Length: 198
Image (cartoon, rainbow, N blue to C red; front, side, top):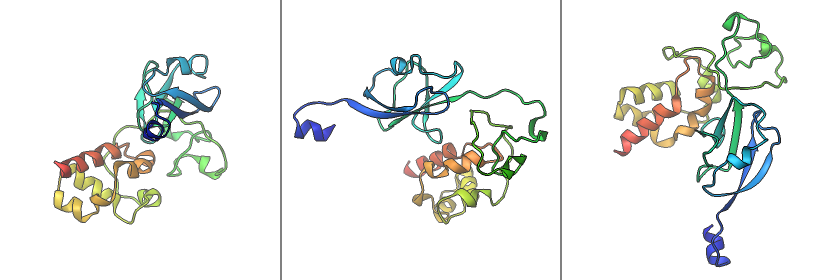
């Protein structure tokens, strides 16, 4: 926008966004106006009436409604089916259609299979468990579980020793996805970072 303002002497509020997710019939790129309602964009393009519309991606985007708008820093609009339906046998079913990082379901025997994701948590909030799952998806050489607990306890010195200055909340998105405890990692880390700034 700034480049076109000085280079071409005109204001350009258009932005190119990607329409993604299983809740969209026709995926692709679309040119929209910054701050305009997405209602016209989604007309006749929703694959489900019960979908969650996200400004951004599914890992760290923001939930919006049908009359909302794409965030200033987002270049993606994602729609995925709403979950929340209880399954017949819960975690005891074989789960050939359900993805699982921890090998809870037998679907891990088919690594190339494509899965349909929705907003289901697949369980409730539980205590934080020490395991090596997080180390497999965390991009830095720090201890994510210990850092999370330091942020919860608001131990500033421990947070600094564990490397809080090297990360942002988005770095913990995959930890949140695979978390067997269903904990909102990004929100907790953001509170820790906010505590340090204040």
